[in-house]
Length: 353
Image (tube, rainbow, N blue to C red; front, side):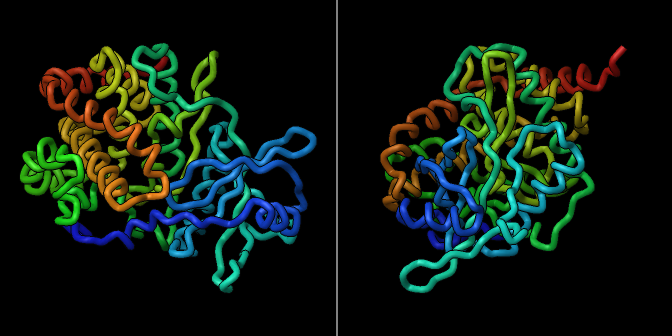
């Protein structure tokens, strides 16, 4: 598959490290805002939550110096498109600078230029590690993701073909650099499936319909409250890829890490298909896509830990959970899960009476 071979530089997992005082000055200069900056985790961006004196919240993002500015424009354009097309969807909004620009350019001590953006804050708490979540949240999360896919069906951008390592359709899972691991779980769990991924799953996946998708609805980006599903954050992994991926990514978690994978997998997909019906051939491949996503996640997390990623401590804490998710998926009855997925698609397609 294309881009199956790459190196550490291709991942761009190198967020900037600007001092808080400097960012505070830039925030006031370009956005006319002051406030308290709280660091947030970031794979490629340096992120901070901003709380102004009057209690308003924002998210400040500084992109990696390796991030293509056209790709940043792609991300901003998606947010603006969804705001126009589906304004009720609770996602971040891009905030203009005082001069009316989509972003600001800042420089480090060596004169290197970085893109800084300000986004609205989406309230809610991450879905997190729940194994027995409320059923309404799962269904609502699926419907939200389907609504988002529907809103992006008519979107296009010149940079939508950019390389994103988290795009499972790219075949990164086959890369030689990811076939050996620090902990041995890649060799034990992933390598036995690579031939099936390469010769069966990836060719089928890349024959399916494609569009721009969010591509990152994991349990840290899905926000909830006691009343239900709240919204979705982090559009940094958007890609133009098979649309079925946007259902597969959250399903990997709901099927692999809940105590009733058939029930929760079915609920999520029913909600998704209520907004965005799937084709039978897409559903037939869905279990394999959960496996593909879980495999790539395990590989990339191990790779980052092995290469001393600056978030290494947090990654090591979460790593055993990824191993368990993969093991749980392997243990499932593929035919039974696929039957549940087909039933969920049929239920979701039933018109409201």
